[in-house]
Image (cartoon, rainbow, N blue to C red; front, side, top):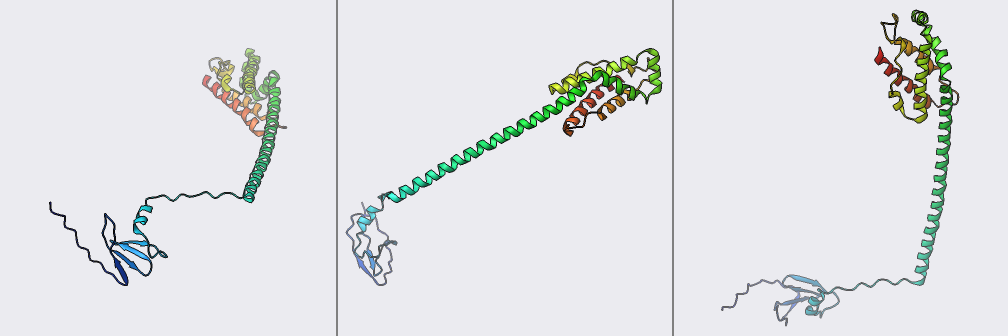
Length: 247
């Protein structure tokens, strides 16, 4: 078997000393220059300060990992770290106390607002509880604008029926507001007395619109939040919308 022909290599040496190496696997020449570097087959290894560097051992050392030793803490450093930890724990405790105080204040304010809201609702419920008198009082005022219908109903003896209807509507609104659920407004209601034009020549839905308008106008205002008054007004509007289906 013929020996493989080795490729020739042109080397340029300037100010360096050429020396034959004794490596078993690689017989490339060694070039040494005055800077302390070694070049082997175009590989440059910086070894300043070590002019008689052993390349074989250098090659072996490249495959080793140099262990990194952790710095040992001195006594003063340990004390410093402990002090920093203590400070952090103290700050953490202060923040926990502050957070507990804030949560307590939030609970107190929420309770106060809830109590105030309940008080306002109680005032509105008290007003609605007098629904029989409200129905008659404001029903009469509403009928002033519908004299022909009032006279017709009075002749038929149906005025009390009209007041009784308004009273029942107020009762639905009362329990809807008390329970915080408008589903009661969807329950079957008493059909409006003045809804049938075959019975009342002057039948008109405007009669109920007027009595509801007056009732909303006289909703208590003292110490009552506008949002709660608006909520009660919405109850009137939704119930009135249901009544329109009978006209």
